[in-house]
Length: 338
Image (cartoon, rainbow, N blue to C red):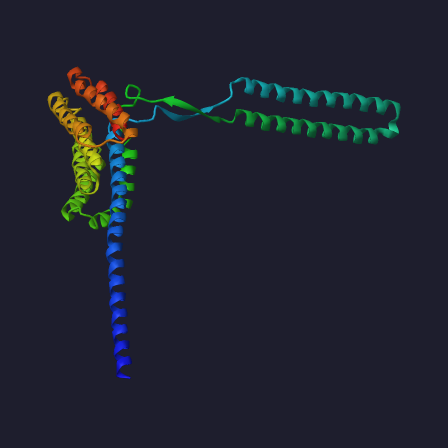
């Protein structure tokens, strides 16, 4: 009997050991999976921040990647509608007068030929006259309604070309403020997710601090204050990339940062410093050509972006803001495709 009890105890112990081992295995295998999912989510959120920062940078010079924008205009009918309306009203009035005169003549003839029927004739005359007047009013009302509809402005849609040379120099501060305020909706969630990655807490906190400073700069509507602050905010985004992105993503983000630095100095026309920043961006991007394996479908975009960077390097020599902005726009658009 004791022998069976011993065997039972051994089986129970083995069962518990196996159960604990199974649970431990599940936990250990689940953690890397969870970490991978969190890292992927953080990468998506960082990409969102990069796209929003690009929108804010471009907004400082009304730059749009789209070649056309939809324009809406109101078209009102020409003056011929008014003259037609007047003509219709005139005809209606003429009809009423003619009918009244004919009725009066018939009434007089009836009186002279048959005095006893004079009341009947008067009643008939009055009825015809009232009917004529009502008809004229309906005609006039219908004509007015039709003319009001014809004179109502109508909206037409079309495609309006956009570009650096066609852009309005006035910054749309309302749009910029709206973009910044909308980002505050996502930042708390992004902050919590970034804390769960390898990103240092101080970098996350610094991003939030710099973004608040950016909001104040945007509120002041001073371009000279907004651009340097945008660079500071983006520097934190690059730090996020350093902890979560692959080598290709890190290089592209660092390249953009150098271009943004040059871009922020455009209004001060510090061409020499701008040239140095662009050169730093080229040196960074060159690592992508020589030190990493590139997917075939990205090879063309990478080669094209490198050529555009080289062209952007020549822009400060021209000392033309328009030339720089055109090349900046094309370069950033291509880098965003990588």
